[in-house]
Image 1: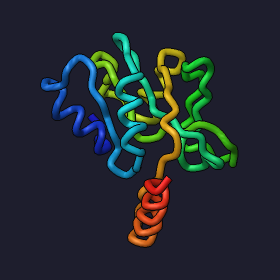
Image 2: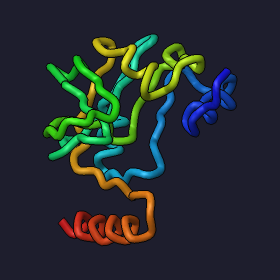
Image 3: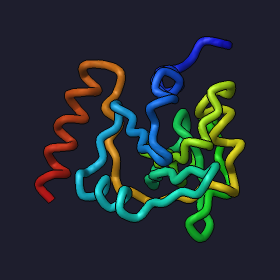
Image 4: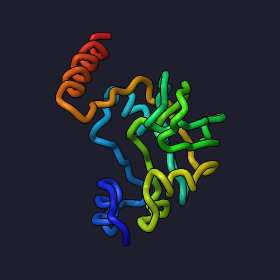
Length: 149
């Protein structure tokens, strides 16, 4: 088996403990608490399916580009290189246990292989916490402003 990314490693280590459906939330993304609750209350998955939380982004370069039609994911492109506005993966998803295939790279292989079988719910504005101290501090300031609204 090839080297696992952090999400894959956790899922692999916990595979015998996971319930039928389970939630994955990335730790480098901020989503407003009420939007997380709405996502949990609104999302549902069938055997072998996924519900992605998505957010409209002005530029999806380096993120993901997701085309949603009537609540279904029709296109999923991981890390597009062409600047465009569109939905992007927000860092939260509900999965059915039978969906997880540890033999595949989670975001670049497994999730795209489920196009047409995935649903999507817009979770509103998200904040990428970033990979540096200045980016983190900027994200904190933005989150404080969001919480005032």
